[in-house]
Every structure is written in structure tokens, then in C-alpha cells.
Length: 310
Image (cartoon, rainbow, N blue to C red; front, side):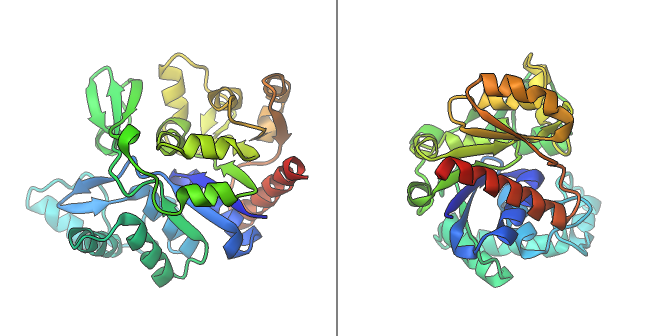
């Protein structure tokens, strides 16, 4: 079964890993958000791409879900000592990734080419694609002004009240090579449990992606469990924009795209309301505390997806 998964952040990376455990490598393509990419200390940083790739490679920090395992931060400590911007946590191993990515970008290589080569070096067998080789930075509109995503999320600790989002240049960006082709060949598309506003919406904003995804059986997994997110500010964003955070709110967010929606067992009472949207619900344990949980959820999602294909 050929599957395309759209992912960003720790939750998206975990389900991508579960899908990689459950499917042959040739059957899975993961398209990753690059709206949170930015330049820091002169380096090109791709946080979501790195989180997904490190997780698939078994290199991710098991405590945080992002960054590298067994990491040290000596370089960052030196930057801070010298009065430099030390607010974004770049570990020493992680710096190697950013240094090499930046070197290759400066010599003219595309982000998709670099990601392909990094995955090969890390032993990642599934195909991982950035949503675009063009920059599409996410701007968060807040009551304290417009902020680039990483300044809002990391420097300001997601504290400013959110009013909306802009994905700069999205209308003129091109999907990365292979993105539309993967969607057109897919038997189904899965939205991983990623932040709808700033992880998946940027991908869907790239011309052609939304329509290509909608043309296939499409199932989303809720990132909100019991009105809260396991990680990240999605629930806070919903609340600040006047929407009660819930699995139902996520289903409504994608209502014109979805065939199926997976929500956690603690939210089972919302299944009827989701069904009333014309979306078939699946109630299942969605909190991925271990790799075994990731695979179990992935298999449950794949079994659900299969019902839309047959």
C-alpha cells in the first residue's frame, strides 16, 4: 500500500517512525514542513526536517523528541559566553548537520537533494521530502506584533497571544521534486498528529499539494488529546483564536479534505460529532510513549486507511 504522510514536529515524526516500522520502505513517502526553517548564527536550520529524519534514523533525543541523543552543547555555551544569540538550542552533533547543509546550500544544492543525501548517510530508507525547495517562512501574527515562527515558539516560548498566520511566498513556491508525483501515486494520504496551523497548513499552502492530497483517500490523526497537546502550542493556538481545542476542532479544520479521522479513546464521545461532518471516525489509543506505541498506532491507522481503498 503506497502511503504519503504529511508531518512536522515531534508528534508527526513519531507517527512517521511508526509507519516506517509497519510498511516496506518503498511504500512510504514523508513530506515535511519547512515553514519553520530559518537562518541562525549564519546557518540554515530545518527543525522539522531534522526532527523527522533524526527520529527515523534512531538518532533523536528520546527525552525531548527533538535534537540528537547523547548531545553536548559546548559550542552553544561558548556562543553565549561571547554574548551571541544562544536562545536556540543547537547541540554539537546537531551543528554538524547545519554546517554541512549550509555549505551545500551555498554551493547551489537544493534542500531536497541535501535531505536525500543526509537520509542515506543516516540509514533512513523511506523517502523524506521537504515540502518545497523554496523558502516559505511562517509568520505568526500576535497581539505583540508579527513574529517569525522560531522567535515566537522558542525565543518567546509561545507566550504571545496568536491571531493568525502567514506563509510568506507560499503562493509562488513550487513543490519539491517528487512531492506531487508521490501524492499522485499514493493509494492514500495520512496527516500525522502535527500542529494543523503551523506544521500541516504550510505544506497544504504549496500550490498543487492540497488538491493532490484531496484526490486520494485521506485520514488525519488528532494531535489533541483530552483538549491538550502532548507537545507544542496547537491547543493554545486554537483557544486564542476563539476555538475550543479538541479533536473535533481538528477534524473541522480539515473537514473538506478528510475521509477518516483518528481520535484518542479519551475523546470517544466526540466521534458522533465527527461523523456528522461526513468524516468516518476511528477511536484508538494515540499517545505514543514508546516505539511499540508508534507502530501499534501506525498499524491501526493503516488498517483504517485500507477500508477507504477497498
